[in-house]
Length: 177
Image (cartoon, rainbow, N blue to C red; front, side, top):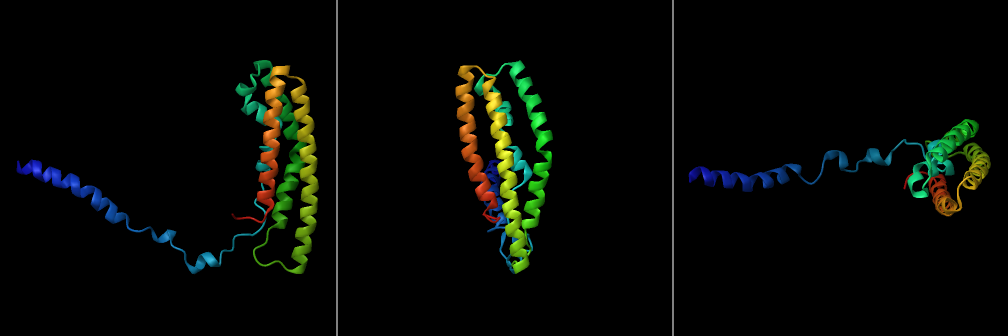
């Protein structure tokens, strides 16, 4: 009986001991002056990968079951996606370079502000070129589908385009949320 009571007491005390040890949070979670002096570069957080994810061909490959693509259609899309990645590689490298140029570690000087402004204009031009290529590739891919598949594929592309513009606006908006 005594062992049974000791066992029950142990079961009741273990959860409370575990909660007590956790405390109100770790020291790492507390804000200090070092957080206020954060040297992390300020500026856009856009990456080339964010742009690559906006490819309508990649979307169709990811959603091939929703669009009900055949194996032959999937293979055609894979080949077209590889060609698109190859042709867009210089543009995506330019995106990374321009975003890096737009970042600053401190309050920008007048020269920095001019450099950032010029880089932003160039970046928007590069993004427009990529968008044009993606639109063209998406239209070509949809044209090869059956009429039933085209409706679903077009619907997915339209949703992706809306999401892509929101993502770009957010990631070019200046950095941290």
